[in-house]
Length: 217
Image (cartoon, rainbow, N blue to C red):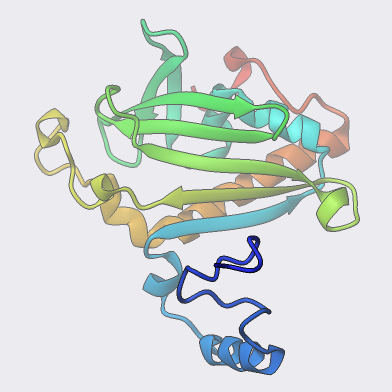
């Protein structure tokens, strides 16, 4: 019988203060820490980027939750419009000519999370999911503004297009072919997002804009 119900002694392999001394844990952690890491090891399955933005978190969240703003800060998403399905939008991903992208926004105001559920070519399975969280910088950095965390997970469809018959052309490159560049590409887009939010906030302009006023339409 386990004398301490809070200690999962029946689960092998756990490293806890009850069974491993501090010096051993420090030695293990040191052995796990490398001076450099291969790109595939860091970004092969998950791609996370982060950025500080000098703009109030409430305004950052309000901007991100309105999906039409993707036309401003992303590199290639343009011309979004509603479909016949409530909450589902369709636009062009100009990363590949003739490619339609479908998007649904899932936002939680209390947690300040904004997830973009997207897919190329079809809307039945929105498997390209961009997970974004807005954190008040006052809480984590002790300064005004926001910290934006953005994660992508490498869904199996990135490696294998589930609907090649829907591609606008047989030689259209697949989105998964760009996975190794996701960190760099998303870092450029995050820089766009930071620039837009800070420019409008510092100038006293409204951070969010109506869809009809977007540039590049």
